[in-house]
Image (tube, rainbow, N blue to C red; front, side, top):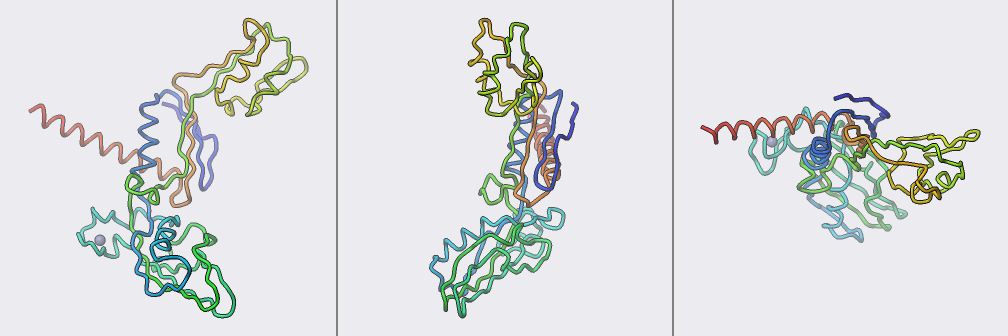
Length: 270
Ligand SMILES: [Zn+2]
């Protein structure tokens, strides 16, 4: 297998992966979405809420705020040594929120949440939670825990995780450069240079075949196929964990699952 990094920043990662197949990449994608844990608010104790939103809606909104996650310092509640429903400081982070509209209406933002651990804070301080009219007040304590996307989407560390085949485009000799393929392509893959149709951005191709359908030539002067074992893998996180860490964790989980499968298989055989 050969991997090439096409694009990488704090929240996105695009890889060109050669020499693998869909079964493996799909397992990796599904594990990243549903098995890699991240932090989210799971329980809320509302001390006072005179805002227009019900306590439950407020709690739901708090749960969906992405929190920066530290996988090395915290345990999943079900794997924590405390074995307690309340949790301990190894499996739970407390965040508090206290805000009042004294003179004019105010909006409560995710940045108003005060965390006991400065490493576990909202990814963005600008997420609106509730708007308070003059005289209204919210005061609450929220408990964040590690969890998995398969139990609730709030524990999903990625907002996008996809792969596609590497496109393969051929322009045949009978092309008369009518330019129809350039006009129809939604991803602007082609361009006209001199008296030639050129493939300007091959990776942008989504294999929609519109260019083939629109080509007036018979037989078609353009052929769009894909490489069977080359993929473009793309991941976009919601900021809770760096994308490379999510891939690393997903591989670790897959490795553990396969080891367990192998162990069970050996037990079954004997
Ligand atoms: Zn614990």
